[in-house]
Amino acid sequence: KTCDLFLNKNGKIIFEEPYLGSMYEKTSYDQIYDEHIFIFSISSIYKIFKEFDFELIDAIPQITHGGSMRYVIERKKNKANNKIKSLIEREKIKNINSLKGAIDFGVKCKLSKEKLINNLYKIKKRGKKICGYGATSKSTTILNYCNIGSDVIECIFDTTQNKIGKYSPGMHIPIINYKKFSKEFFDYSFLFAWNHKKEIEKKESKYLKKGGKWITHL
Figure 1 (cartoon, rainbow, N blue to C red):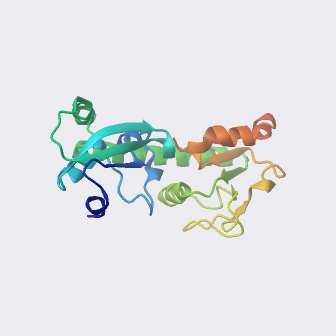
Figure 2: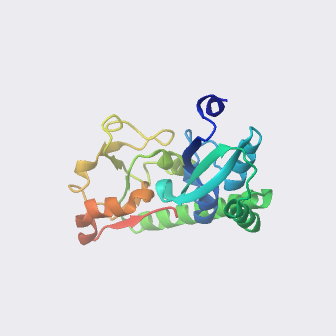
Figure 3: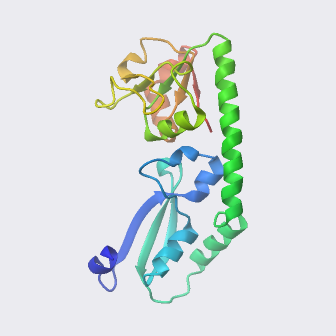
């Protein structure tokens, strides 16, 4: 409705969303949280806008959020678009637009959960210390789905001022100022903000030199 009101005859709508295909491929179930209740595919965007006399004219992969898609929409002109046709066909082959894809993803999530829990408890049994890095929305999904609390991950370091001094939702792990990360050594650091891995590893390069290790659920 809003797009219809604001868009002129030759206008285009451009927006980005976390991509379902990337989430399936990486088993990155942490993409699902309060702001990302729905995860879209190219096929679903095509179908939704078709209902309102718009058409998808381009879909461009992005690295944002660990795998997003930039969509370009315009008013329906019934032009042949081989690129979109090819992308939708590829999603069919990969079961991205089918129930089978969702069921397979559910199985992979359970296996990922079991593997993560086993690995974390093996680390703890060896007497090693584990912290978290980045009190992200993604971390809330991981911690609660895997039932990981402060008995495993002692604290989470973060840069956001209004999170520091509080606790992670549900599992109540203390959130600490990231500046203290370099002052107390943790053998392993769970990188919750894995989609910013390069920037964080560069910023915290001394951590690896001290013998620390980054881990993720992926």
